[in-house]
Image (cartoon, rainbow, N blue to C red; front, side):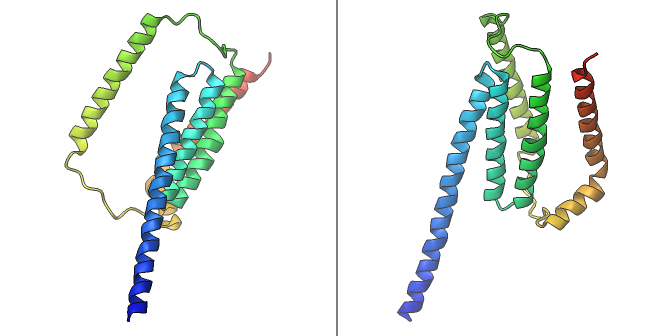
Length: 181
């Protein structure tokens, strides 16, 4: 009987170690995401900002994988990192904007931008707390890839197609802007 108790104790120990490993992985990804997000908004080079955005979005995909939402994590990589960031970089490379220091930005403009950012953050935080303070999470979320695809292509087909048309319009606009006359 003591051998069975020892095996049960090992099972608990292993699941506890996995939980600790997931917490450590979460903390590492969260710290990397926070640093990359701060660097993304403070860097003066737009291409570097797009690269930092890739790091943040990859961290989000990693968080989804830790939560067991593999479909959403892979979709995050394919759609956001694979398509949206490439579209950002494509737009950055096609425009003839400056890639370095912007001499036209004074400290007064930076202060005003920071104040407006804090104001927007405060309003959004207050609205979210006011809207969702008594809300409970639903456990009835789709769990399999088939359920997720059924909800996308039945319930949310109109927003899905609207986003496809928007991305197509952005691609056509980029080609028109890039075309030499």
